[in-house]
Each structure stands twice: as structure tokens, then as C-alpha cells.
Length: 187
Picture 1 (tube, rainbow, N blue to C red):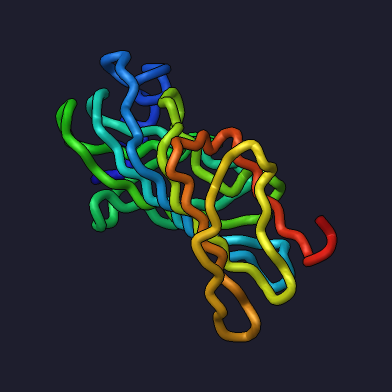
Picture 2: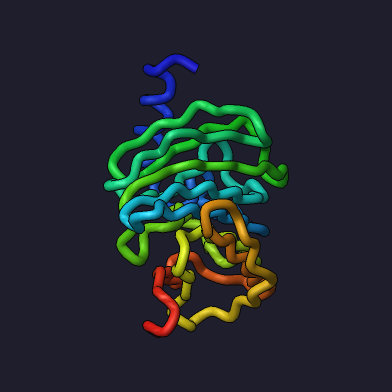
């Protein structure tokens, strides 16, 4: 898709306001987030997969902290065009209301407690969640306790790193989920 076309779709999506062109909210029915934290703890990479049931035509809009760099967007496993204005990442699609699609967004930057996730704009963002967090040696991920996730397992990786796998079977709002890294015994 040409850059002028993408820029036009971004501007149109942002001008439409809540719910897109038809005023309907797209529905999320599953989230899967994988986060890898650097050994120094001052950088992370997130890959977030979201399964959508489309209600509003043309575009999906995700909010990604403007300090983070979005490096890849895919729809149903294929690279997709996208545009960005500030925190808003606009992903054009050609699906009709009632169709489903899966987006995968990859971004990275410095963590600050609440910017680990891409948040759907104007969409109820509560959905079952699979969360995997890869951390450096001697570190563990913790949430703020407002959500009830079950630790499914801890995988031992090379160089002393571990991957913590959580399942949230009840819908969880990513806007409310806070994630921090701690050293054992510090919390």
C-alpha cells in the first residue's frame, strides 16, 4: 500500500473517533503477549497477538506508548501495512463486520511499569490472556495483584534466563495490568 494511502487511512481513522467509521467497537476474544527483558533490565521487546471479531470496517487502532518503537505488524501471519501518529498505531484491513482476524505487533523500548502492552483504542480490551515473560538471571516478573493469573510454568533457558508463563482465563484488561521485575526476596 502506498505511503500516501496509509497516511490517509491513519488520518481518517483518527478523525473517526471511537469505534471507527460505523461507531461500533471491534471485539477482542483472545490476547497472547510475549515479553523479553534485556539482561540489564532497561530494555524490552514485546510481541503481542490479538484475535479480533470485526465490527467496524477499514482499520484497527492500537495505543502504544510513544516512547516505544513499533517494528512489525502482521495480520493473520502476513506482514501488513500500518501507520503511526504519536501513540496511535493504525492497521488497515479489508474485513467485513462479523469476520475475524489476528494481529501481531512487535515493539520495543524502555519499561516504565505500564507500557508493556499495546492497548486497543475505543475497544473493550478485556479478554483471556496468555502472558510469557523472559527475564534475566535472578529476576522474576510480578503483577500488581489486581488480576488473577495462574503461573503455568517456568522454563529454564540458556545463560540463566527464565521464561515465566501465565494464563488468565477470566478476561483481563491490559489497561489495568501492571508488570514489574523484581529480585527474589525483594517482594
